[in-house]
Image 1: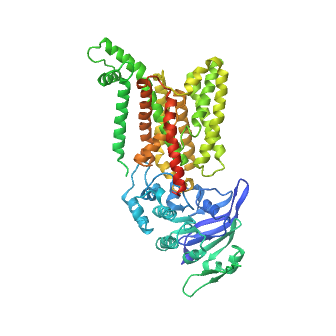
Image 2 (image 1 turned 180 degrees about the horizontal axis):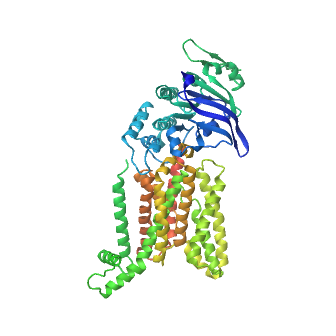
Image 3 (image 1 turned 90 degrees about the vertical axis):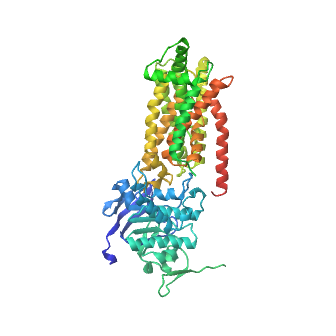
Length: 265
Length: 347
């Protein structure tokens, strides 16, 4: 069944250089619709650069990125915004918008320039607020929220955008365990119920193993390896890419789990 | 919570009309509001109603030829500076940005001073043309210089930008000093103009301001909702269908043009662009669709009131730029201090 899924992304020979310094090279990968991809790799391995290319906010210096068979850079801005959403790593907000107003910004591509939000827009916003359990915050100013609350607002904004593809750049980085799991659950639910494709850069490998279908391993500005969680997540990978000694345990009826070998000496 | 926007715009329009009428009546010769309204309506419709006595004739000259051009110029410049401030703050995501703190006003002033010195030195370009054009070139040049200096900071943070603005303004103020020195005996023209003043403004200034400000106001309001989205940051705004780089560029040029024309007409008048959008944001929220037009109205009311106080109420007329800086400077300190405290508590 999975093999028959249409291709969402087709990345061919993609490279990116910033002021002459290569940041990303020879990236080739196909991403299928309705799959949850975890983007893992050490800091500075090129995850955010790849995300910028996938969202069309940077243009590759070589190669092409097709999203549903059209170059991602060739889409009209509004069309692209109805097809893909981004949750950034963090955001700073200087102005006192309420949580509801921020989440409603996710509906921007659907509202006419001088129009007002429709009932459908409000429904999408309310359901996104409910999914992330932040309804009680909806009239609060985002400037007064904790880092974790703010991060959930950002994810809710992307959910309200209601797109076929969702891309997240370490969306759970500043969240406690419970809210990290809540966000991953909400994304998983979109994947399973609505065939949405999710690409999430993620540092917590246990969390990635528990919720993703496939892992994409980035290292030194290119894709080191990708495939099913079980085949990718091994102690060799942790040693070679992340430079840590660890055992990967796979309990029966559960997802792989990493046991790090610390030494206090 | 935030108020109703209809009530806000209703009261702002009413206040502006009332301020214009009151200001027109005040002065060396005081004129009752009923005569003011009668004269203005009469001139607009071309009908001088009833018996046109000698005092009516005098009122008409005072109102139409002397006071009204100055009053409308003050109102338009106030509105323009507040609009430019609101746009700069929205684009730079920085409540401390305004044409003055970014050095744009100083750039325009340098451009305009250059135009004056050229005219003093006998270069035959009419001042009415060269001052606005040179002011605009100075404003855009400064904008580029300030951005160039702070470009290493990808997020264009408040402090980097304002520091760059201060550095550029310091250099420009030295350059203006040199121009004053070159102007020699005719230095008074430049000094007086630099301090900011609405003395002797004519209908020509009003028309020039209207011609630039109204299109820029409409242009800014057209992109107001995109500006709201851009508060999420450029990358996120791009994925929401907003061409943030293009809109940022166009609106920066538009706001600099507004600043340049205001400076060209009336000299350097600081802090209106900082305080007005800031106050309104507290009153009406950060939504630029309301904030930008409301800032235009409120800026007009504020600067006209300040100009009327210095013109008709104070025993001696203080240059308006000096007055706004004296009041606005401490307000800037207050906002800056509040933000620093907010940052300290990890707001």
